[in-house]
Amino acid sequence: MDWRALALGIAFVVMWSSAFTSAHIVVAHAPPFIALSVRFLISGLLALGIGLATGQRIHLTRAQWGAVVIFGLCQNALYLGLNFEAMRTIDASLAAVIASLLPLMVAGLGRMFLGERLSFLGLAGLVAGFGGVLVVMSARLGHGADVFGVALCLVGVLALSIATLVVRGASSGGNLWIIVGLQMLVGCVALFPVAWLLEDWTVRWTASLGWAFLYTVLFPGVAATMIWFVLVGRIGATRASTFHFLNPFFGLATAALILGEPVTTRDLIGVAIIMAGILAVQLSRLTPGGPAAPRA
Image (tube, rainbow, N blue to C red):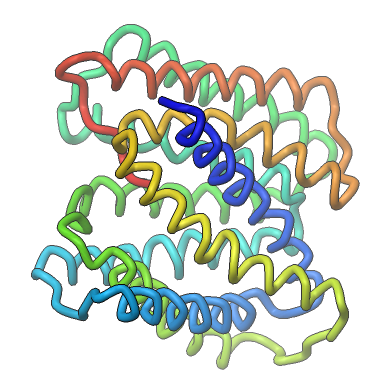
């Protein structure tokens, strides 16, 4: 873990965490599924273009095609689609905190259904992480947060956790930009009919929408993906995944700084507990023989 890896990890966390704030701005001006469909189309074509320009080709194994379809549906259509819909009624900071459950859910589901071992540190981190989320959620629900929006976020992160376990490692072996681009296009194809049938195609064109949408496409959509794979190639997926413990803090801070969302003492306590829990789970994976951490 050198200074370059540290800089890459923090850059990835900032982009991942800020995606909820930019998405909150987008859905305040445009229907969520329409906005996401267009985002996936642009990001997917950009990723494919980068892949083809660097010599990658659309020549995938059966496992990689499976990863493309499953992640395109679960990560893009379900996880992001449900989060975008939820952020019409809940704060971006709450959505970011719920999304930070991903490494905890992956570890918990792997323990329950795949028999993956967790050390005492990992189990303690798992309990603490979920407890911290409950602290934040109970405070927000007590102050009028939309229960249905919270449920959408929980279903979304559960879908991504299951997909991560099902196709873990299937995207290895090169052609990463091609795989990422195709996943995004799958998400576009899945969401566009839903947007066509269910949404009112009324968009309030403003400078805020333009900047937020451009940021969402270029940074969380493309740049964060590139940084993640460079980081994994430099220090490995297990060590790279330890940066996830910073996501709750940066998600809360970004929403407070840009959107002016209120932050209470209870929020800070809950986020601190979540960060400690995620860090404990990820550090337990660094022990010899421990299970590999999932790709973001």
